[in-house]
Image (tube, rainbow, N blue to C red; front, side, top):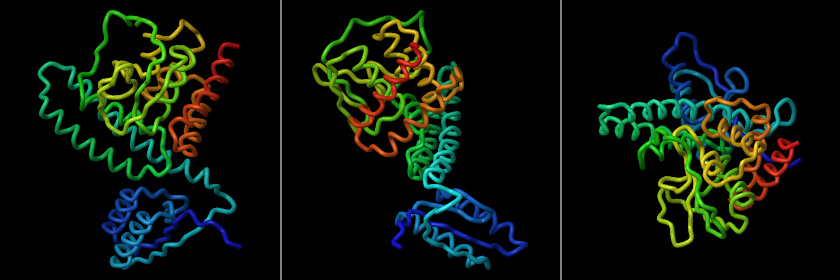
Length: 311
């Protein structure tokens, strides 16, 4: 039988009395983004880059007097491909959360009087390098990436809003082109649904690879650096759009709480639907590379969620 072989497995045994080799091996596996499924059994997707990483680690182990085998495999029983991908996403979300917490400390530092911009810029550069490394290991599109990237972008490209006397509602908009970053995820998918469903039924969408974008006539930006509608303070873009342009709707407020917890990741609302929405969005983004298709699939999800919350 011709089974597909999407995984690389590394089995290793280290000699006793070699703590240096043990620590070095652990760090190398972590740097490669491998996850462990059993004691001393590590997994990576079967890509050329991952194959090179495991080959390098095998040479390090062999040189240190250990024994290592790398194999291609497909999970048949006891572990599904979906469960394996979930383990990778869980690991990467942990990495993103660590970086996000460090970025939030920089938000507070920037707000304090006497904070030195050159110190903050230096710390931002290092965090940006680490975020790029984690992104390179994010093989299956973990849900924590957009929040960390958005927070980094806000710190890099503009001041952090501290808040004001209250949100000012904007005049209605019609038949605009709404611009955002490519590879949309939870906040941008939900925001696009909100825009077309409740704010601008004639909306068109445009996606850019650039962090900053100068809008053309008739264009509005959302969830990106310098956008007319993006994160403000501790609010995600969906919350800002809803406050400025959306209807007064209790079900939409419930969805805003779900999107807030998924995007900001501060655990403020903890609604029971949040986990199911996260899983559905992860599945959409994993299977649909096209951003307009993601909006279409996400719209079906959020239409059903809105109807459920209204009921």
